[in-house]
Image (cartoon, rainbow, N blue to C red; front, side, top):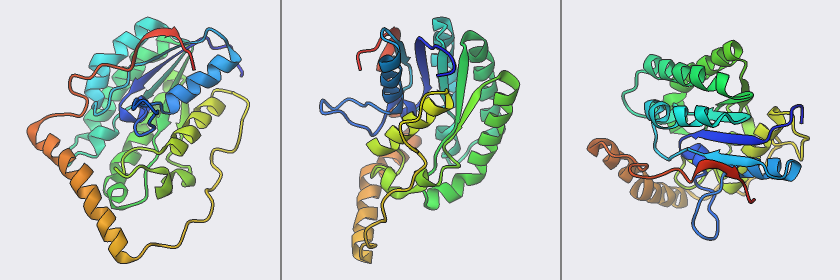
Length: 255
């Protein structure tokens, strides 16, 4: 690793919290935990905090997590946010970019290395609908990184992360293998010795299932995931309401 890092704070939403990488006890692991474990192996006593909470919009991330993260003065901070805003039917992306800029301006001076990301996107109709918003957000991420000395992990440009097999049945969150690849991508971006090519392709897919199997899967997705999401939007609620971060303090991590 190019620099000796002894601490790491993760800031963001469900992507950074670790959904849908389930442990046997029902808690979420995710790429940030996997990255912290890599740090621990290289630096015993490494400290890690994860302030990310599912469902958070970029303004909530700024108001609830950024000042807290900056006060920890960790060596590495990762910030990923804005996509929960972008996938909503009505979204002012100029406002989202402005809030993200406020967050970066607070975090960059508080750490040795700020890491931003161009988030991955699953192939499908949802991505095509929000692609212009995502690309506006990612162009702003690139600009902010250049102005504030941050690193950018380009997950959006990795073709393998568009493969539907790396996405959970809710079509919004990565599988354990997807999280493993993201953790490796951040590790390598920070100068860590590569363990494998995280952009490498998956094995050839199985034959495409018949149309009625696909329709059944679509109906199950709508009933289990899409309709509850729409209901929360209509009632002004979030999946993260009342939920505390899983690692609110910067403490030694037992991987």
